Amino acid sequence: MHSSTKPVWKIFGYELVKAKTKHHKQTNKVKKLMVGNYMLEIPGNHPMIGIYKDDAGAKNQLGRLTALIAEKYPSVSIIDAGANIGDSIVKIKTAAEVPIISIEGDDFLFDLLKRNTMSLKNVTLIKTYLGEKIESKKAALLHHGWNTTIIPSEEGNTTIHFKTVDEVLAEEHLQNRMLKLLKINCEGFDTIVMRGAVKLIREKKPVIYFEYNRNKMEQIGEDGLSTLIALGAAGYHFITFFDQNGRFIMNMPFEQENLITAMHRYADTDNSCIEYYYVCLFHEDDSDLSEKFIASENSLPVI
Image 1 (cartoon, rainbow, N blue to C red):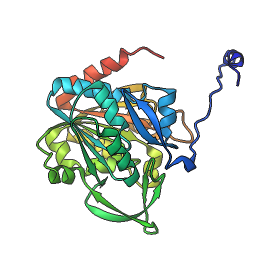
Image 2 (tube, rainbow, N blue to C red):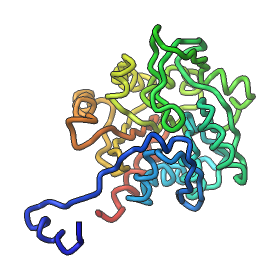
Image 3 (cartoon, rainbow, N blue to C red):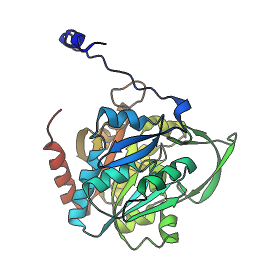
């Protein structure tokens, strides 16, 4: 619609925007997309094209978080579980030059990940799917090759081989690094992946940053809330919520279980203003980091 008509709509509190659509025929057509300071190759129907074109600052909170962690722990290494095409890597690298251990299981995405990171320093690429334990499961794959979602099912036509974060770190001899940030974005498997990182979480007490998507968890029968709350007993004292666009919502102590449960219930892809959250968990040893991070997010201009 012509821009001159927009003020009329705004009088009544509305604005017309172009809807985001996914063209599945574009899956294997690779496009170019600027993310942070880097140009990435990306599948033509990937939803991140619309996200970053609408908001170049999307996911910048991950970079800001990494910079604060690196300030406290100068020798930090980052674990990027569910690396996709590498957009989180370049968001982090734009904010702080830190070593990154990047894990992705999808064949097509891993090929793009290699191409997108070949010029970057200190990036370790590992190809595997991550889960709660080492096992193989039959599954159906949704959005294969651009945003792969694994739906375990005995009727599935694909067998997925899973490893745990703990096993991958041991196999690659990476467990002795200063692993103080565990980033997870595994399409509903995020809390499952956490349960496969028990040794890492117990010994390293990393900041945990992940996508919390209740709808995708329900698709695979995952009760993410119980895992989230259980981390309170593992020394994690503070939980921070961002909406799907990376806008800070609130920070709260784990003792406020009723409020955490209310946040869990609210986000819904079809019936809520918030589709899903990005969640950040801080161990009690990093309460100072939590305070600094929240202060930095609250100091940002309101848009």
